[in-house]
Structure formats: structure tokens, C-alpha cells
Image (tube, rainbow, N blue to C red; front, side, top):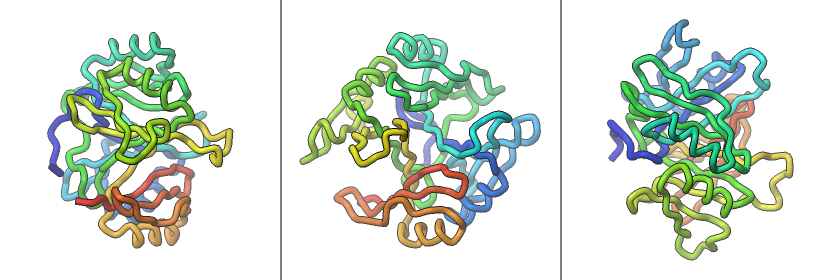
Length: 257
């Protein structure tokens, strides 16, 4: 269902962009997706909520002073107790970089890197449950961990949340896996190929649904972004990988119904 009012623990529930050029990012993503924005105000560091039909679909916020001069998307997994999750992350070989932190009235959060170096967040919901729309035009639809060590990534994630892991049909288990909660697929893991530069770290890739992937790719280029992977078809839909003008990588897909 497109409308959401909560997520099972371990499910990707929210994504946000950290960027050194918030105004530029608002122009870019507003142009690509048609998003409207709501500013949380100075007390919240001018964190913006991206809206589709008045429903929250993603966040955008300015980079903190001293941060690297590039943008990036963060995937948040829905949690139940960020303090317990922080302990599990450390025990599994990961590192908590930020938090646990109370976001007044909205939830509790942390930012961590897994044992292979991929950054992610955990969001313990209170007033803010996560994305209110998914799997429709301009909304979040898929979250995928890109890793050089799927076995290690699965061990780590399975230590933090009760995931089970399965191969895609006709896909080798060492190339792509999906992870499930209570039998429901909630995300994927792709092995990074040898063609990926060695300096590229493991990372989570955010997919947004677009009804017209080709038009979205054209808008990205017209607005100063880059086309990293041309639109192409697969059994799971037509997709493209894009980069915004500040360097944040994301993907768009029109899935099969």
C-alpha cells in the first residue's frame, strides 16, 4: 500500500539527504521529483521534509560545519530501542558515529557504520513514523546495500535485526540477496563488482519510484546532475542511477506491478 503509518522493526522507513548546498538541493530535487518542501525551522537546523500530496516522503538537511564538501543519502532502519541497537552494532563489529539522540517528540536515532564501512541510520519512531508514502511516483520504493562482502554484511545485519536472507530467482546467492522480516522482503544486498573503484566505500543506495524513468534522467542532467547508469530494463522494472550536483548518488525505478 502506498500510504504508511508505521513500519516493522528492521524495515527501511526513512531516507534523508545531507548536503553542503541545501538551497541547490531543494531546487534540484524539486525539479526532478516535483517535491514540495516544509522547513522545520531554525531550531531544527532548517531540516526540510519533502512532500508528495502533503505526505512526507524524505528529508533534506544542511551539512554540519567541518563535514566533507559532498552530499549523501542515508537509509534509516526502523528500530525499537536505539540504545539496545547501538550495543548490538558495537558487538557485531560496527561503530556508532552519532547518537543515540532524542529528536524532541519525533523519535530517537543513531548513525552508524557496519563492519564493512557502510553508513546507515536507525530510527526509533515516536511522532514521526517514517515515510508516509511509498511505492508510488516520487516516493521511496527500495533500499539496497552495496557491499564487497555479502556474507559479512549479512552476519552484521542479522546481529542487529532478525533478518532472513534469500537469493533472487535465477541469481547467484553471492551476487544478490534480499533480506526479509517475518517472511516479507524489505530490502536488498548487491555485491560490488571489481569494476567499482577500490576507493568507493560500501554504501546504501536509495531508490525512488518514477513513473517515467527516462524523463527523470533527462531532468537530472538538465538540472546539473549526472547520469551514472543509463535507463535500462530488468525483470524488476526500468531503472537508472543518478547523481545530484553536490555528489549524492540515488536511483530511480518504475517497478513492475
